[in-house]
Amino acid sequence: MDKELERIKKDKMAQLMKRDIPTVGNFPHRGITELDDKTFGDFVKQQGIVVIDCWAVWCGPCRTMEPVMEQLAEEYAGKVTIGKLNVDQNQQTSMRYGISSIPNFLVFQNGEYLGNVVGAVGKKPFQKLFKKILSGELDKRE
Image (tube, rainbow, N blue to C red; front, top):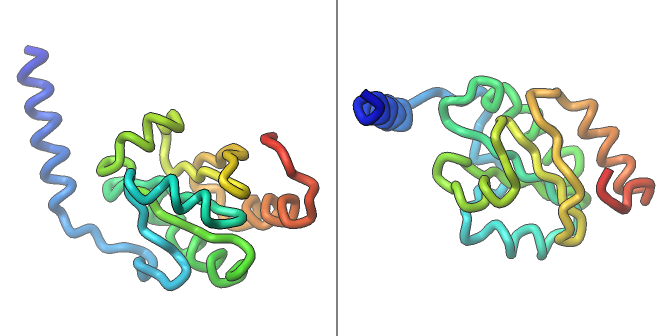
């Protein structure tokens, strides 16, 4: 019975991954970099302040955050770098950071992991967070 459920689950996930689900935003967007397990480490080390949007194709709340991340990429261009990581296709990084809920936004400064923001929280929490980091108020993990 367990093997049959696993097979059904795997088949259903494969079907979902093949579906062309329309995006809310216009990804890929200028200023947002698509990452994978291989490019992730160098990317966060080579940038100042970085937010990695951990998402999946089938995740509705992830899709609602796309335009928010696009707006933030434009507003904070040159100050904050935004990347996207598909957790289904990049499980090594997902496991490394214990991502069990999405959307999940990993925050780094100068290559150091500061923490994360979980959920479709909108724009204001990120604006507050960026203000703290840019002002030097947040120089360690909170």
